[in-house]
Length: 264
Length: 163
Image 1: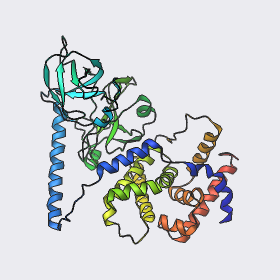
Image 2 (image 1 turned 90 degrees about the vertical axis):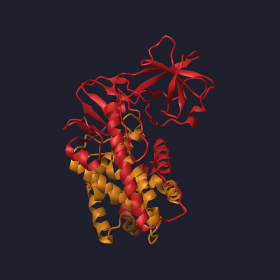
Image 3 (image 1 turned 90 degrees about the horizontal axis):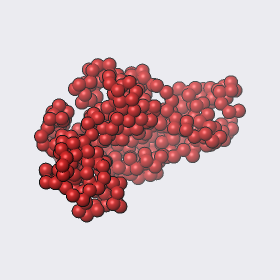
């Protein structure tokens, strides 16, 4: 159709638009993460049925577990096992600064933010498994372990990072289909660009499986740009701040914002 | 080819094109990214069921179209669409403003008109390729495109964009 030519010329610029690199990386990562483990045997139909049943039971168990975890997060006396976007591979790039070391550790039901490196630690308190698997947790000399702890990191060898409890609120991001995910929220992308996509209700809880036991009906739910809303979204509740994944208060806006959880 | 290999391969081969298709159809950057991700997750999940009767590209487009439709339905249901979420508002250059105006112009089109417009005008596909990727009849492609072009021209004539 030749009369399209002028329009095609006009819109040529748009044909140069490409997938942003960060989105590319995320999709490749998601594909890898979601890829089923290779199997050499094709299960029979009834086996598949049993497997599906098992998966459903496992899913229910995880949902119940998540609910319990939410309720017990401040009082738990055992370390919580969580996973984040940081990997040991990233840590090997550490150059002696806190970059490359997770900015957050969970110990004894509390979230601690990384402060910096230290050389001297107190007695060993236990082992944290978040975010990169087992890591030894130590008391800080002269500090209340409820407020500051030290965590041994694998690089640089023999170093410890001191961390401080962040009591500014909690962000819970769960995805029972796999491991919990954490996302970084900034005031700009959460508040200015976040897209209101719905209002929490029993209906949305039932239909999409959000784990949101304490969200009042009518709570507004906002998309986090670049994040599948089924995995995480921001909600606005009464209060006064937006928090990021490190539970830091980052902006006062007349409403409290938390990431909330969704099940995909 | 394993599902994972297929998903990576199709993403490498057609990722940019399908990104543009979704982006200019839904006009919301974060929604685009969600749909794009969902599309390739479905590729991963459905690859073993793909019967190869059509080309992988056609199959990919049909998945993307389903995802777009579902997303559009959800959006209508929630009746919440705060604003157009272009990612170029912080860029002031003339080129970017021009691109922005072009993207804005697509707002005057309906979903199906945008779909056919992206394929025929932006991707410069011919009629039969568009029939294949959209899964529409030839007459539907023709009439929808005709209406889309008419609206776009009117939009420019009314000074909605750059002359």
